[in-house]
Length: 147
Image (tube, rainbow, N blue to C red):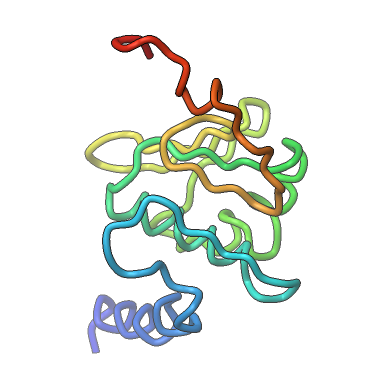
C-alpha cells in the first residue's frame, strides 16, 4: 500500500467523524448557533476543537474567536488542554501558537488562516454563562444606516 493510501486509511479509521458520537457532530442544515450543553466528560472541548480545525481546513472561516471566562481558561483548556486545538490538530493542520499575542495561525498555501482569541467572526464559547443582551447590545435602538 502506498504511503498516501496508508495515511488516508488511518485518517478514515481514527478521524473525528468516525469516532465521535452522532450528537457530537455539527447539526445538518443552515444554522447560525450550535449550542452544546452537557456535563463533565461529554467532550465539549474536543467538539469545539474539531469544529474549529474542520472550519479552518475547509477554508470556511478565516477569523475565529475562542471565548472563555478568562484568557487563561481559553489557553489552558481550549488551546493547550488535553482535548484542545494544539493537542488534537493533525500534523498537516497544526497551527502556530503565539501566546504573547493570544493567537493561533494556521499555515495555508492560499492565505493565512487565523484564530484570534477574543475576536469576532465565527465565535466558539466554552464553559461560560453569557449575560443577557440588552436592547442596546442587540442594536435595537440604533438609528437606521448606522453600525
